[in-house]
Image 1 (cartoon, rainbow over the protein chains, first blue to last red):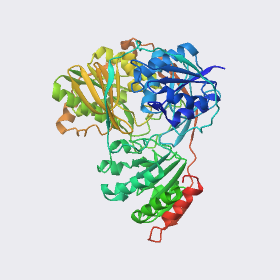
Image 2 (spheres, helix red, strand yellow):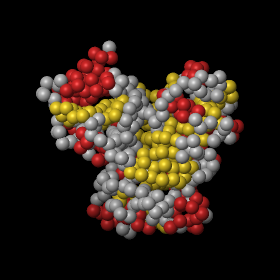
Image 3 (spheres, each protein chain N blue to C red):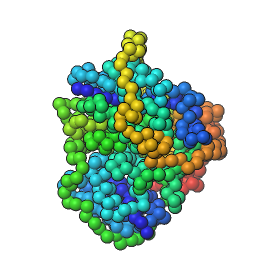
Image 4 (spheres, rainbow over the protein chains, first blue to last red):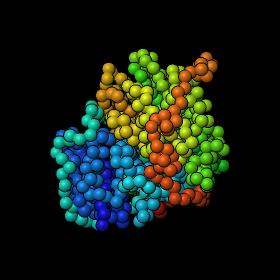
Length: 317
Length: 261
């Protein structure tokens, strides 16, 4: 069976769940081969093995960082040259897409973004136009590079004993005139990224005042969720841009989406209507968000949300 | 400093987008079109760089002849000149080939920096800036929420889960900017009038030395197999809170029954 390369998404060896989703899917397409770039492989190796990686291409040492597109591309290229894979899977995150697009351009291959399903012939399913249309597409040229949307595939363990191959201990190929010079940790940190989270709690204009985003944050923390915001809330300056969900913000597809004080204008629905489960709290019974909600509460969010947060905390504790 | 900004014509954000059943490409003719919203931030950032360091701002657009309106819209914000690549053979181009054509056009302009919006609101793949950087053989600084140029060093702030990273590269480089990096200016009346007479250089594929069979639908590296409207979601349960928040407990029951808590 041909290899299927999976670019490991990790934070200094702490592997992101989307990597295991890709490894699980890769097993149905060929031999999953993990490509690991940067520090922390000793910590990550066991998890990669447990999720079925039959080989690991390791790019660790001087110049190898997973924080820049160029070294990721160089490592993927080296692994691809040695394995001649049937496909290359990267996460549909900014870093994964950056590396995938550079690899495809370098090799003259085709790439599909935001893949939510894949069949055995590598025909990919994508949700386009804010989830209004489902497209099935394929790569015509070269080895398919596929950027897989987080939360698209279930994770199943299938222990393997991967052989480790070193890509090289010092990076010489490619472009090396870009660098990360500082990591700045801000207060917003600690919560998952809105585009990758399994649960997203979003707030809108119904919150009435930016300070009331504290209610949304408290619920998000109780659920272990990311915080999102509607365009109205972001444009009003209530919450930072990178949290915006919608046509001009991020497109999310979590297991659970909680809409708090969001009416559900088409531009918002375009960013979240492919969520697996949607619940909404809004005072207006006719708000469009209820038409796509699995469970809707018509009521005063200032009463309902604190009660919900208490109940979640109580039941989890 | 010579600053180049890529811009794209896209369907209006509120318009209902659909694929043309005949060739499975986005129907851009039956809807209102606009300058891709994120590109306005890239144009604004280019103008601010010029205001600080001097130089020239050139807008680059690949799109059909009718995209000239989009080019003029971008010019009305203040750039000095534009390049418009249009050729019937470009219809149906994939993201990678779009980057390839932009690369060829950029080599004619020879800028010191290329700014792109982080994504277009139609296809939303975000692949073009990275692929473009690779074709140019330049570093790519992706997802800038702040940008500064210090001599030949180009420095951005890039959002992370926990805050942001400072990433820098030696120019020339491709920088993709995200919404919110600045507050784009509205074109003034004077700007709109001036845009009508600003120079727009037009290139065909032959001008750029690209074989028409290698781009457009004929040379696309990807193809749509089929497509269908997604079935509409059904509304589920709706409960009315009596006014004391107890519906919050019912919602918690629902979340528990679906194993979220």
